[in-house]
Figure 1 (cartoon, rainbow, N blue to C red):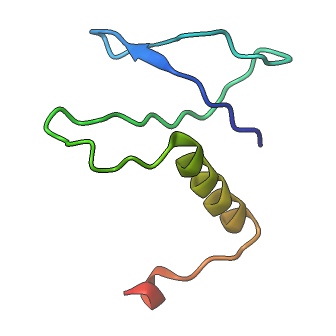
Figure 2 (figure 1 turned 90 degrees about the vertical axis):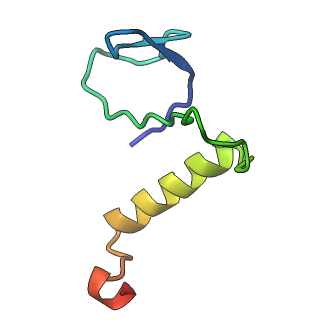
Length: 75
């Protein structure tokens, strides 16, 4: 699986318009993660999007390889 970072705008109907075309080899369905700042949210979290995406990718890879901890053991 390949991750692509880009920006987009959400219109009044909740539809995304990407700021640039994605470089893909063929038309296909994709999975999308949308990060939205809340209106009353302060910019306390200045973690870069690159670091966030690395964490998501790492977690996904761990899930794919079975390197997970059962929820019952976490609580």
